[in-house]
Image (tube, rainbow, N blue to C red):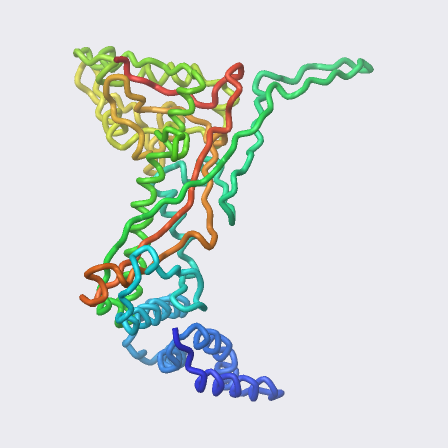
Length: 422
């Protein structure tokens, strides 16, 4: 990424001159406010002509006049600077297309900041990426689980305390106080694993103007968030714990937490469904009854199931063929027995011996997401059939993990599964 030293010097001198003036007229005030952003942007490799165009457009807007339309008229200044950073990165990629003596693994330029050569991460990439992950699966949503963000990937020992069995009692006036230790203490090791979104190929022509760059940035965010959510989410739910996270359902099974075995929907419909191929209203009632009331009062209590299972529960009818209306919707969000339903795409379908539904106090599940120098966007420029065809590849690396914050099997479980019988 090349910096226009001459223009940087000119802008810096102009800023110094204005800073020494005691009073500014309106035009000088606007210019003085603009120059720090322009100087920072030029240091990041932005074109002075483009920045001046932004400045002119701001003046035109203030006067109610039409603006120059060579850039997206709805984009903020930060978004345009971000897009131009992409353009400069890809321009360098194109200029360096002769360097073909490297293997793909070493031909990856880490995109970390606006400053280093080939280094770039849009300022809002990870916040929006993680928000998109939460929209895909509740195990990434800080309102549904214990979400931990760290700047490193070292194993964290998360304290685990079980104390549901201990309740307060009445103490008579003047009576001696007694002490009771926590019912159970321990820790759960929370590590992370690196996930690769896989590569998306983009033509250099598509990044030639700011509008195109803005569009591609938004598209790649959605694509990478979806790919990562589906890959990481599958492991957080079903992972074996060997070279991958120990998934939620696997952890419960390893602890010996007894599931509710489904009876099926035959009692609702009057037909021939069984607990191996269906779920009924009684199965959900039994799961709720098996959950300790202290967990049910949590603000992170939820039913977890995939969309196909939710659709099945929506479709249940009575023996008279009328909709049971078992799933209630409040402001467009589903509830069963007053407990919110969160769609988790990685939960199994209804089928023999599967676990299609989980009643969970999400406080007891920790998901960990890492932002550090080992993660981010990466650009591939020297892989076969890329740069010589005017293309580059973009990928995203994310480090994530999860752990169940419960290991005292003598205490009530914070998660109750509904399992189809075999």
